[in-house]
Amino acid sequence: MRSFALLAILFSWLLASCAPASPSAAALATAPVLSPSSTTPSAYPDMQCTSVSAGQNRKYFERMPYAPLSAADWARGPADAPITLLVYSDFQCPTCAAFAQTLAALQARYPEQLRVIFRPYPLLGSAEQPLNDKADLALSAAEAAGAQGAFWEMHDLLFAQQDTWAGLSREAFVAWLTEQAHTLVLDVPAFTSALEDPSALARAQAAWEQGQAEQLGTPPFLVTDAGPHGGPIDIDSLDVIIQLNLLALRQFNRCPAMQLEPGVSYRATITTEHGDIVVELLPEVAPNAVNSFVFLARQGWFDDTTFHRVLPGFVAQAGDPSGTGYGGPGYAFGIETAPTLSFDRAGLLAMANAGPTSNGSQFFITYAPAEHLNGGYTIFGRVLQGMPIVDALAPRDPSQGLGLPPGDRILRVQIEEQ
Image (cartoon, rainbow, N blue to C red; front, top):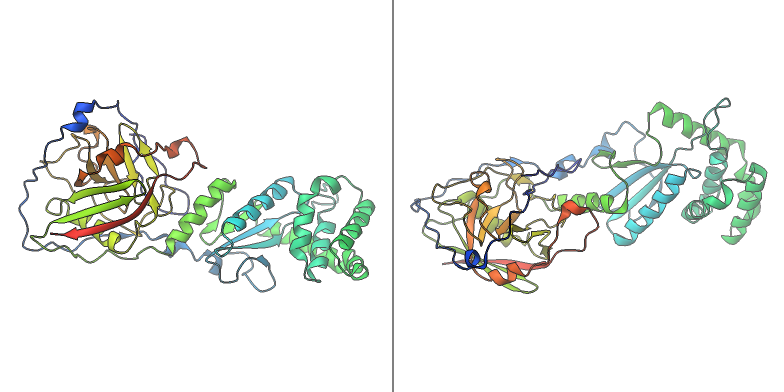
């Protein structure tokens, strides 16, 4: 089996395998009835879990080694937004200009959930080795506009038209900035006065020196509430981080209490956009998995989620509200196996995991026998009705990259006791 790595900064659970050869139609149609050997217990024991809530790691801003967030920062987005991205950037840096567009697109996707904070890190260099020769003037222009309530307008303009001004002389750049001040309907005399104020240029120099002292990486240098981000900064990768941070707000920080009753049978109806999948749950052989599934279903955890990983001939996987394949409920528990159960047929319901103690909320339904999964994954149910709906799910393989269209939707999961 090919393992998927955990996404940096957040825990995840993924079933990760290469799909076997497609099963025959007969194999799909003649699955025998499961016969678990365990007898019904007088009472189910409490679950034993490990807390892995990503939410507990989302406090980096409170202890980061950089200057604390304050009202003096240039911020765009709701002050109470659940997600904050802090970016150290340079107006003359081409990668920073591209990243500014990425951040704008993310804020368009998450207007109420995302706040972006800009901090200057102008790459000035030294007299002997100068770097970006107008980074200080560009920063001064943004701050001069900010004094008139137009920081972000100038911010966007500087990045959007970087190719226009980056090659100008300083004198020509000042003239160009003055034209932009007219365009933004600023108080032009006040703007030009502030533009080349020695104190403004000194602040730019101080920002450069502070960035060097703090050992910031090459801008754009991104910090999230989980820490400095050293991974990809394309929109799809950052969207995963945002989705997982939003999911962290919903996660649980402890095991669900045991709510299964001895002698009671449990069925789950997985209502999809294409119809219902009815599943018999097996608490006698997998009480922890069934209890967690029942608890999460009753909490609405699975509502409006997707089948994020569908590999025809192998499995259809769901249970991650973020849709990324990296999300879980905030707790993890161990696998449960029974000698009478094996991955010998289609229509088995099992827990996805990244190791023997990492069961969470993600589950999968088998399309065919998968004997190589025996002993490593918890079987906790079987499909009674709706296997044709499972068969018709749109294929989706996250290993092929990010930016895939969403998978087929699960509208809700309802639990029935009998």
